[in-house]
Amino acid sequence: MFNELPLHITPIAFAKIKSIMEAKKVPKGYGLRVGTKNTNSCGATSFMLGFDTKKSTDDSFIFEDLEVLITKKDLLFLVGITLDYELSENVSGFKFENKSSSTSNNLHS
Image (cartoon, rainbow, N blue to C red):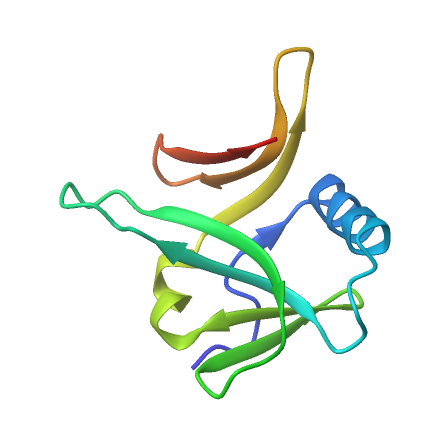
């Protein structure tokens, strides 16, 4: 369906993902799973991140040296989304932004 990764990963988000993978000793063969969860009745979409192995329902993309796994049902929700990492005095965490709308979804730690 897609030849290229449907979302953009910023350099700071990529560096943080790689840092987490190293710190958590994520095994070889695992990739970054990006998806959606609990889409509510108002049409808002929540995003999720995790580390996983490829399933038969996944499309796989390579970003730099990172395998990114997305289920086929989630692909369209991720088109045009930017995955960033925010680090400030008050908050730190991954942030999903849709540049074509005013919405964002934060995964703070």
